[in-house]
Image 1: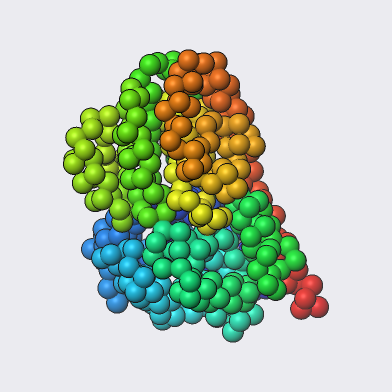
Image 2: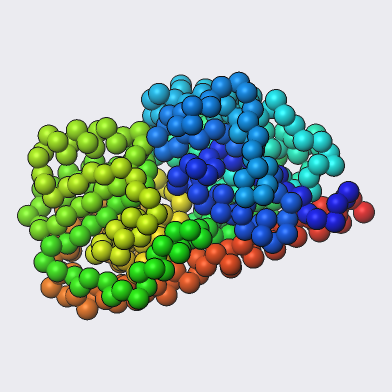
Length: 415
């Protein structure tokens, strides 16, 4: 090594100010910088979850800025006007890969390359650079792009899905070190032929800024469960979430509820039209809020809603529930029982899990909760207790340990 300070290149599509994963990934980089690592980031121009050029900087020029003391290199890419179009998503992936290729680090520039999946284009670039430079590549799987495309209706299944899975797995295998964020995802990765013998479990955490906003409500008692059930959904609204289908079932009930939906994404237009057509005032659609308002909404909600399309497998990130449980808000998870979120909610008794096949009984389930508020209080307590596992300091420490493991293993391999 030419430097006593470990040097890490992070390759990712979304990064602050992008929401969702962009905030989390940036917080990880911040954490590594705080631990003394010399970090640098290659990412796309801001576009998510709006699927639009929100900065007005998309183009051929590569923009470099200093962000929180480290360099961030932003690349232009093709942004799909129809994110659920299979053809447009292929161009999107390829365009980011080709855009990244315009700048390649040299052998002695970095000690480790860490790349986030879901974008196969990102992983393809990182492994291509790693194979030519000898820099070890850490594959951090947040989502399985090929399986998620099938679950979200982007690929039609059959041959197209098998082709995507084959390409994805082939690219993955070029990385020597793998990690993922939930045990079901780790198990899925281990089933890939010729996967590494170890796939490290490195859960996500509640990023520091949202943690501070949620903590500001810690001294305020949560509102008691009343006859009107207050539901909250916040995040991406796309094909994978199947949110309209859940709303249709909820609409058919006689329940007294208020469902506040804060989101954006490829299917937000469909949801907006559905709410307008039904005229059901129990549903409210709002844009994504800032973190202070999200913390307030979480504090006031009786349930934090997470929906996942049936047969989604393990392609979803269980970190969706971390803001909910950190605020002591029970989860209402509508998903497969064997997926990451379903397993988490059931194993740690974090709230109400409902399979899509049992959705017709949702009214009965929620009515029983109103009649038994003690159960709701137990879920609040369990949520807070489980949230301790997703502590930021613990999460950063796990990442540091894995980086040290990668560097030590690489060093031994050279000797």
